[in-house]
View 1: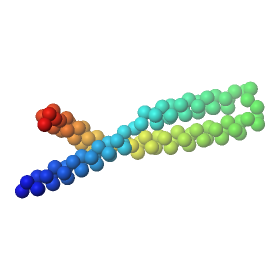
View 2: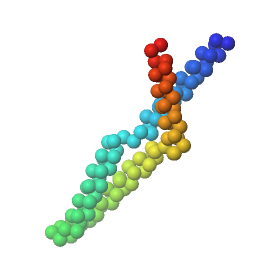
View 3: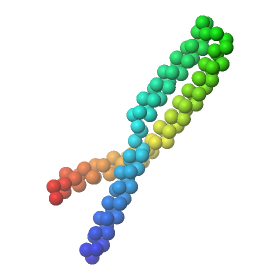
View 4: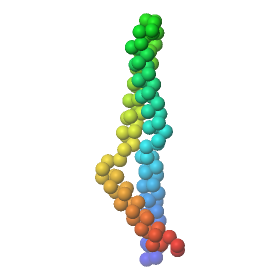
Length: 111
């Protein structure tokens, strides 16, 4: 019977490690958000340049391409961020798991 107890804890440890790894993968990186903000500022600046009467006709095509590329990159990053979000149920289960792990650590952490 003692072997079964060991297996239970070993299996649970493995499952917890999987959960931890999944949490690490679904945490939106602040650098993604910062990069997105920079791209949005660049996009606004490019659109502003396009409206500037001082811009020569031959430059407008380059600016339009820049705008299109920025819009595509912004969309890609937004999609990546959206894909990383957890569902409501996953977020609730994650919070419960964290609370339980904290309780276990508080109660048995010194052992």
